[in-house]
Length: 487
Image 1 (cartoon, rainbow, N blue to C red):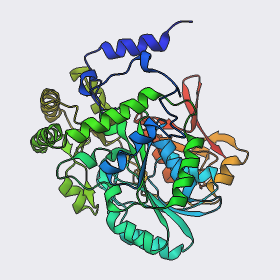
Image 2: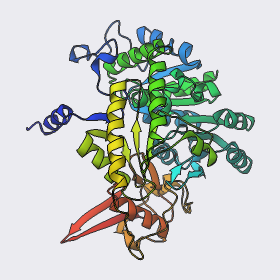
Image 3: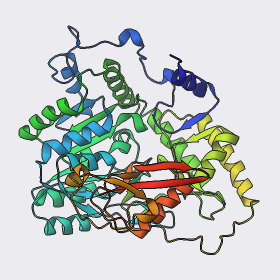
Image 4: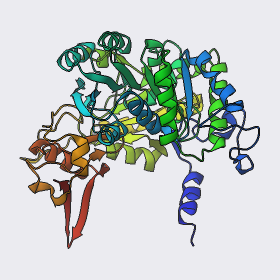
C-alpha cells in the first residue's frame, strides 16, 4: 500500500505556509509544556482512569475545570464539539420535543434534530450587509418564539459565530429560564473568551445551561479537543449528560488528547496576565492598521453593532471585498500563492483569518506585509463589468431566506429519495442536507421546499468554487451536471 496521505501531509507541512486557521496551536510544538508522542498513546490502564467513567486521575483533573470556568461540572470531549452538541440536546430533549434554534446552527445540531425527530422552530439572525454575514439572535426574537411555542424544551444558538458575532446570552438566558426551558450555547469558536482581556464574557459566565467549546479552534490544542460545561446545579441533567457522553464519544478515547487538553487549559490559565495580554495588544495594534486599508475591508466591532448585532469577537479577522474586484476565493488563492498565507475560510464576499495566542509579532508583521501589498495591487486592478443578466438576487447568506418546512427533518431524512437536476428541483422537497462547508450551516434541510432563490444560491456557491456538500456532481462530455436529493 502506498503512503499517499502520509506523503501529502508531510509535503504540505514542509512548505513555508503560515496558518491563519485552526487549530490554535499553529503547529508550534514548543508552545505548551508537554508534547506527547506515540509512547504516550495508551488506553484505560491501572492508574490512568477511564474517561467515560472516571473515578481517579481523570476525575480529579476534570474537577479542576469548574474552578477555572465557574461551571457546575465540565467534561473533556475527544470527539470535538459535535459530540458535545449531540450530548446536550439528547440529554435535554426527548423524541418529539420542540426546540427553538438559530437557523445558522452547525450541522451537528440539525443531525440531533433529525435523530430525535424534534420539531424545530427556526430563528433567523440579523444580516450584516453588504457582505451577507450572519449576525446575532436578539432577546426579542427569543421572547416571541417562547410565547408562540410554550412547549419548547430548549433554545440553542451559536455565539460567537464562525465570523465572530455574539448574541446577548445574559439577556436571552433570563427569558429562557423564565419560560422553564433550557439554553444551550454552541460556543465552539469562543473557548478563548474566558482568558481574554476586555473581551465579551463567555456564555458559561452569562448563565447558559449547557455550553460547548472547541479548544482546538482558538486555543493551542489538538484537533478534536473540546469541552462541555454544565452551568447550573441539576443532578438529573448531569446524569443524562454523562449517559449520553458514553453514546457520542468513542469507547477508545485518545489519552494524548486528554493530556493535551489539561495541559492547554493549565497553560493558558497561567497566561491571563502575560501572553494573553501581549496577544491582544498586538492584535488590536494591527487591527487598527488594517482598518485603514483601501480595497480590503476589515469587519469592525462598530459596524457589527450598528447593524443590529450584540457584540463582536475581535480575534476573528474577517477581510471583506466590498468593491467586487475579486471574490473571497480568489483573495484566498492570492494570499496562498503569492504570500504563503493560508486563511481559515473563503466565502464569496469575504475570508476569515483566525488568530490565537500562538500568533507572534512576527506572524502579524508577515500578514501585514501581504495585506499591504495585495491592497496596492487591488488599487491598480480595473473594475469588473457585470454582464447583462449576470446579477441575481442572492439569499441572505445562510440566514436570510426562510425555507418552507413541509415535513419534519427526522421523518423526511428517513423517507425514500431520488436525484433530480438542480435546475428542475424548484418547488420539490429536499431529501437530504445541503451544506456550504465551512462553516457547516445547512442551506437546505430534509423536508424543506426548494425555492428558486436557494437554487440560485447553490449555483453561485458552486461557481465561486465553494465546497457544497449534499449535492451530486456528474460529468457528461463537456458539461457538469448537478443533482439534488428530493423526496
